[in-house]
Amino acid sequence: MGVGATDSDARLLAAVGDLSEAPTHFSPCDDVHCGGVLLAIPALLSCGLLTYCSRFFKLPSGYYGVRHIFMILAFMALCRIKSIEGLASCSPGEWGKLLGLDRSPATKTLRKKVALLAPQAEKWAAELSEFWMDSNPDQAGTLYVDGHTRVYHGKQTKLPRHHVARQRLCMRATTDYWVNGFDGLPFFKVNCAVDPGMIEVLEKEIVPVLEETVPNQPTQEQLDENPLVSRFRIIFDREGYSPAFFKRMQEKRIACQTYKKFVTDLWPENEFTNHEVKLISGETVEMRLAERGVLLGSKSSDQLWVREIRKLTKDGRQVSIVSTEWQATPAEIIGPQLGRWYQENFFKYGRQHFDFDRLTDYKLETVCETTKVTNPAWRKLDGAVRKLASKLYKKKAKLCDYTLGNGLNGKEIESYMENTFALGNEIEKDITRLAELKKERKEHSRKIEIQDLPEKDQFMKLSHRTKHFSDTLKVIAYRAETAMSETIRNDLGKHHRDESRRFIRTLYTTDANIRPDPNEKKLIVELHSLATPKDNRIAAKLCEKLNETEIVYPGTDLVLFYKMVSP
Image (cartoon, rainbow, N blue to C red):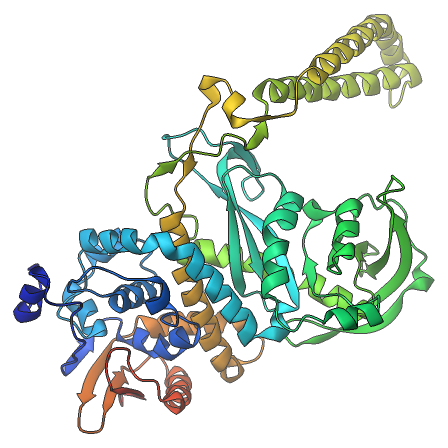
């Protein structure tokens, strides 16, 4: 039955197929390791952990049911056990007490159960995304979209190379495009084994979903009455800058907002006036802003009038933002744009604490044969063109110095001028060679279908079903942790966002006593004393707030009741 298994009757019934899942039963326990994670159950349930389980998931009869698997995976994420294999180094009996079972599932069993659940992950994640948007309609009206590059270090397949900004290298990777709410909390993601670029993913994958799921969109009558009204607003970085794309989105009545490219002029400082800008954190700051209407687009078919808002920094720089949202004030434009870093912070925090970049399995899948990829022959020639153009630029600059004698004394000028003729000949040869390379590059298509790739460049994509399931559970855990940290942030101080998260992480790994009281229909969780009296007071307040929710532990009729053990 496994180390720590004591429920022999239920396990025997499960083995012969007469038990759909083991009943949840708690016994009095002292000093349960990571017992503090039970405080997260109200937040996990409110974030939809078990809301749609019965609709999308079903497991064959056995000892562990869907509810057990979901809860153990959520507990693991909150306690920073970043992989299924990591659970093997933990005491199975201790983790079983958190589930109301004799022990937690073994690594092999848990991985098998996850593989059975994973095929329905995308439908489940889509339903959860809509649930989160409906629960927070104010946060869904302004959405952040950004791509996160997930590096692949394996050798099973030669994935296309992507530029990894945080490492400043081109590495084999896949790209996940995340859609986050105005408060930075994630809604859903789109995985791209072959990254076609943000604009194409936005237009073909993300916007159609948002049109169907974003709540409180204006009706068609309201749109007809006021031509300035937008359905919702999406904010992204410079990768999505495209006047033609802005125009296509405006036809759909979707507002776009990003940083402006190719800013070369400076506006007079007397155009900038003081504005009070409310940040996402709730803090109000004063900024110097100016606004103009600008015409974007080089082609007449792509030209579009947009709003350009600039922020004047203390060192004199001008941060330029373009937006097609016409009903917001300049302060309401600049505030959300600066809040885009909440999404960047989510990526960083997710990598460090929830290990979003970890592979969950080593399975591979074929890529659709009609998928467009960069032509290797074109890429090679393009690299040669760029390399030669860079050398040519340096040689021209050097020739200019020889000719003008910049920073050179008389003797140096005389010696350098002797080489001017030779350098000029080199430049002429490079110009000729560069023209030949460009002509040769034009003879190759920049994009070709995967089926037309040479055999040595063929590749398969990483299987994403299991990872999508795992990432969705981690997003639920992240949302639950965020909700709990926001609850105690005022007790720590409104500026202590990072400190509140640290406190909650400590809380999850704190030992606790479990005291079931069947007569009172309560499951009492006694949290052990924390490091300082201040921490104990904050934890006691949190317990009082959680007790007000009167959440029943899933699978039982026991209401969770939290309290602190006297030090």
